Length: 119
Image (cartoon, rainbow, N blue to C red; front, side, top):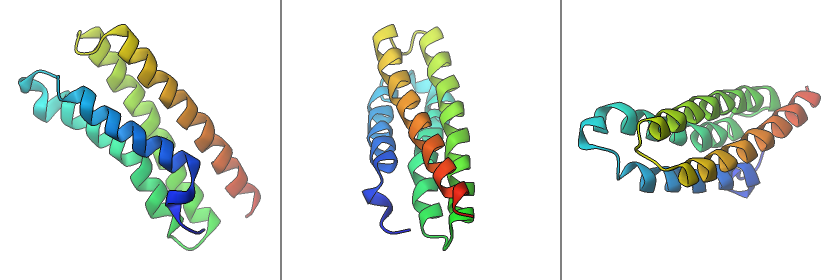
């Protein structure tokens, strides 16, 4: 597949991870092993699975890992919703994060379709 760092979707999701770490620093200390940890884990899962899948030797396997990333996008979207509803993030931050997720979801869907057409 080549270098995963050359993929726009990986770069966008890597930037999202950095944003998530900044945002979750302000979550209450009692959420450290709850929502903070879960949100960071879901965010990390997106570029991590893209990176792992790209080194798996074939389009079918890469597509499978991209589908896992896609699932993590949906999980992270819910974590953002909970954080907003609990007052841990404001509406603007929520909207900004959501826009990034929408873009990543679109990019992943396109990549998955492209990969599936090859096998």
